[in-house]
Image 1 (cartoon, rainbow, N blue to C red):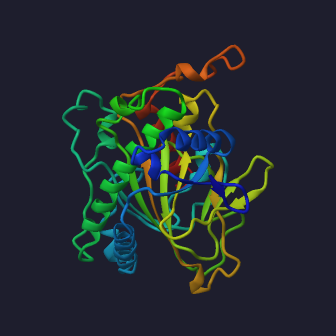
Image 2: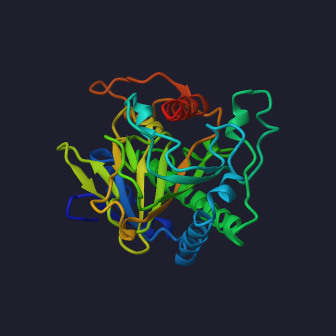
Image 3: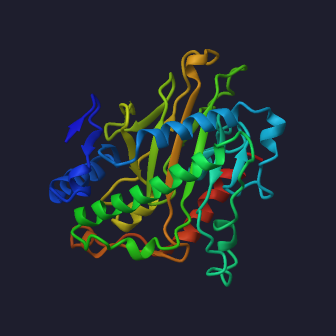
Length: 331
C-alpha cells in the first residue's frame, strides 16, 4: 500500500480481482477505511477510454446553451435525474449547515434496469426508481454515461466483495442487498466563475456521502476535492491518471457500527476563480443498495468494547432524508 503526501492510501486492487492475493488487498483496504474512509485505487479494470469518453461527452453537454440544458430538468426539483442547473443544490444542508448552494451544475443518471413494478407497493420507492432522462444532444452523451454507469456498477460490486472480506464476512455478504440497487451516477461541472461567490459559498460544501460507497473520477484543475483528516486539517485528493477515488458513505459507517469512517469532504474554491484553469469535471457513482435493504450493524463489528450504537434503517428511507435536506436549503 502506497500513499500520497497526506497519507491517503493508494491501493492496487488487481490482485484481489484476479484472485492472486485477496487477503493482502483486503487488509490494506480495512486499514484505510478504519483510519480515513478515503482510498485511491488502481488496477480497477475500467478501461481508460470509458472514462475519457464520459468526460468528453459531458463537457459537450455542459457547453450547450442554458435553455437547451434546461429541457432535461426533471419534473420534481429534488429528483436525481437529468440536468440540475448551476447553484440549485447544496450538500452542506444535509448536515444542517446554513450555507449557500454549491457552485456546480450536474447531470444525474439512475439505475439502468427498471425495478418500478417490483416496488410498486412501496410509494416512497417511486422516486428512487424514476425513469432516466436521456438527452438527444449532443450525440453520444447518453451512450457514454450509460457505458460508464455499467462499469462503475461492476466495480462497486467488486469493491463490496473486498469490503466483505476485510470485515471477516463471506465475500458475497452484500450481494443479496444490491440486486435492485438505486445507485446514482452524477456528472458534475464546476465552471470558472464570472462573479465572486457569496460568503461561505463553495464548489461543494462540506458533507458526508449518503450511500454505501462512492467511486469518483476527476479532471485536474485548481480548486478540488479535499478531505478532513483525523488531525482536523483539510487534505487535497489528487489521484494520478487511471486512478479512482473511493470513499465510504454514511451507510457503510452504519453497517460497521462506526468502525469505518464516513468522512467529511468538500470541493474547495480555486484561488483564481475566473481563470479557465479552474474549470473542473467529476463523474461519480454513488452505490445505494436495494430500496428495502435494511442497513443494520454487521455482527463482526459488535463486541464488548464496541456495543451496537445505530438503529436499523432501510436504505430508501435513509437516502430520502438526505436528498430532501440537500434540496430544502436551495429554495
